Amino acid sequence: MRMTGKVALVTGAASGMGAATARLLAREGAKAVVIADRLDKEGEAVAAEIAKAGGTARYLHLDVTDEAGWQKTVDDVVAVHGGLDVLVNNAGISGSAEQDLYDTAAWHRLMGINATGVFLGMKYGIAAMQKGKRRGSVINLSSISGIVGQAYIHVGYNASKGAVRLMTKAAAAQHGRQGIRVNSVHPGLMPPMRTSGRTADPEQRAKTLKGVPLGRAGEVDEVAYAILFLASDESSYVTGAELVVDGGWTAV
Ligand code: NAD
Picture 1 (cartoon, rainbow, N blue to C red):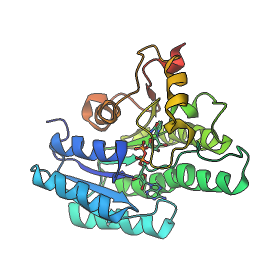
Picture 2 (picture 1 turned 60 degrees about the vertical axis):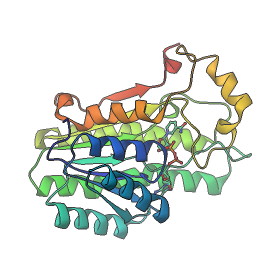
Picture 3 (picture 1 turned 180 degrees about the vertical axis):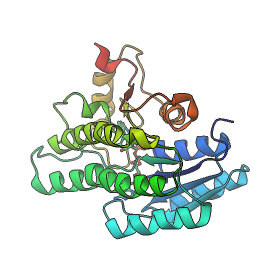
């Protein structure tokens, strides 16, 4: 088992890649997986499904833009499970539904959830890891949109995911000596997000696929396995890295 004894907190785990990650970390023997999201019904269902399969999971309501909510969530995890070993900052929204790629309200929304949400997660999650004096692993979900631009996505999505990519490296530099590793994961074309617009459009997806060497979209478990590697001790000498899971999209 690759997660034995570890307590993990996964944001945005009511859906998609976060839910797949929560299930996988639990299957790999995590001491506890805490699912944090703002979709209560869906989050509770993922936790119940994990428990039914023999894992230990709990759902907590968290809006990742809410600083007081972060403090409360991390305090709760530490109080109930004795510490925090793995934090997966996965919650996010898409930038492919807006018509105006310079819409100001969308910019603030994207930066608030995708960038500030990750910043707050690191602020409270890393503080808990330091206090517990245990080693820790933080995995931040960026995107290939944090590395290259796309013509059909709001610039705030690229900006927020670029911010995630670099705040990951800053935190890796700052916390390495404390045994805390911080890495980013960069999925490519995956099943559409709940908030996707153009990236859910079959025509747009077919066009994108022409540039993907593996010739298909990724599956949520293929990202979850990359996160599992970074969460486990198998990646003990990996920090500040960007793990691209994109079927080769950005290689060509
Ligand atoms: P999804 O829409 O299925 O899941 C996102 C989850 O985040 C949802 O459960 C949602 O409720 C939650 N969330 C959104 N805003 C929140 C907030 N303010 N507070 C708490 N939870 C919130 O999408 P997904 O495909 O699983 O995406 C997961 C991550 O991967 C995101 O960060 C996304 O940007 C990134 N990503 C997705 C793709 C893709 O094509 N699907 C590609 C690259 C990167």
